[in-house]
Each structure stands twice: as structure tokens, then as C-alpha cells.
Image (spheres, rainbow, N blue to C red):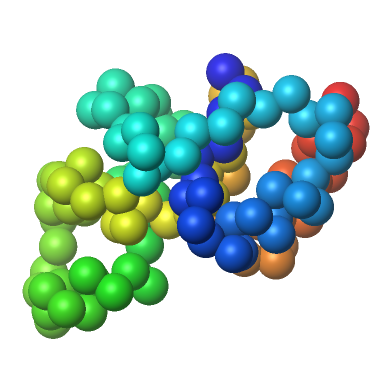
Length: 118
């Protein structure tokens, strides 16, 4: 599987996508238009080892719901990600059995390197 889960309306996602090699051969999955399935999320979990790693604590709903004041479990993180697309840290790129989560500079550099080494 070679897939990028992103939000088409997100400037950061668009900028990251533009920075990737043009021959990346990625399948694009806009999580607003096409919500992720339980199976997709569980596959991401297998690669990352944690639902919390896939969860965005920058999401406005995280603050609005007061979630930062709660002790969330892995099951909570999973349920919130499935409940609303903004809870998935973006972008998430799956390259076969490797996963790249979020938009941190080191993560994007590792992703670009992985794609350019192919």
C-alpha cells in the first residue's frame, strides 16, 4: 500500500504534497470526502503501535471538547479519530510497511528521503 491520508483544504498538507517527488506513485485519500475506515485505522495502528501517535492534539475539537483535561485511553483515541476526521494527525503516509505521521519537519524529511531512495 502506498497511500497518503490528507485534508484537501489544509494548506500544510498541500505544501507537503507539493514537496514530494513527482514520481511518488501515492494514492491520495482526502479524509473529509472519504472518511477512514476501521480497517484502515487498525492498519495504521499496527504500523505506528499507538492510536495516540495518530491522534492530533492540535485539532480545534480537542480544545473545544476539553479533552486535554481528560486521561484518554487508546480506545478513546481510536474512537475520536473514527468520530471526526480532524482528530487524525495529518498527513499520514503509508509506504508498504512504513508509516509517516504528521507534519513535523524531521518526519517530512524522512518521508522525502524514503520516496527519493526508491
